[in-house]
Amino acid sequence: MLEIKNLNKVYPNGLHALKNVSFNVPQGEFLVVIGLSGSGKSTMLRCVNRLHDVSGGEILFNGVDTTKLKGKALREMRANIGMIFQHFNLIPRKTVLQNVLSGNLSRTGIFKSILGMYTKEDKERAMKYIEIVGLKGKEKNRADALSGGQQQRVAIARALMQNPKILLADEPVASLDPATSHSVMQYLKKVNEELGVTVICNLHFLSLVRQYAHRVVALKGGVLIYEGKPSEINEQWFKTIYGEDAVEVTIN
Image 1: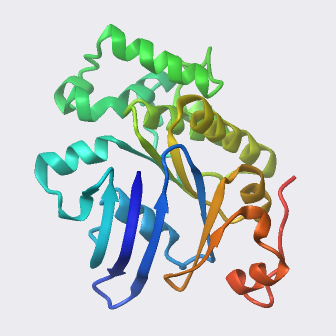
Image 2: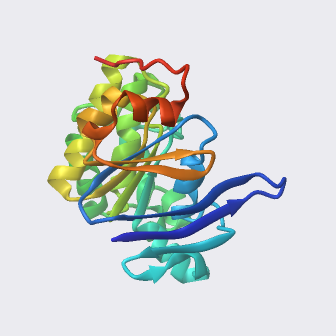
């Protein structure tokens, strides 16, 4: 589904954030990307959905090089790629249902979205996704009245409104406590397994990686240094990825 070939990203200040990164993501996979802060994880996700332009290389989405797309073709490509951020990016004063419906913006249009002109089908789909992420009964609650974990689940439901083929999750549990982290990860797993959505997720904690990832890639200084199964990340690999002085922190 996704082929990343010799991906490079150099920022205007000269920082070479990604250096010839290459790997493939088959349809239906739950891939986790790990590495220290500043290793290039977030940059890579933002290149995949073209929030950042690349400096070199190719990103093939179903065989089409997305780095060359512009205008309508770029918008159509982005509609197939959902994104979840560390900070939930919800509209605080809007209800859960209104926030989820806003995920259909690419199809509804800005004018109709502002006026709340959603179809019956849109509302039924939104309610379906609200139920999938375990928030049935809270659709009329304001977003700012929810806990952090609940807000992140609203963000997942909002991304699902795009009907994405790929869901990108950039440190989706970094702002949450350990118990809530597992709750959010369980719903991402549910989206992957029950809806068949391919998931690419940036994470810090290896305990979560081992529990939820089908496969792992690790970045260090913008270079891909590991690609394989979570179970194969032993102590030696851990120190290679995170440094000799690093100590693994477990989320139970």
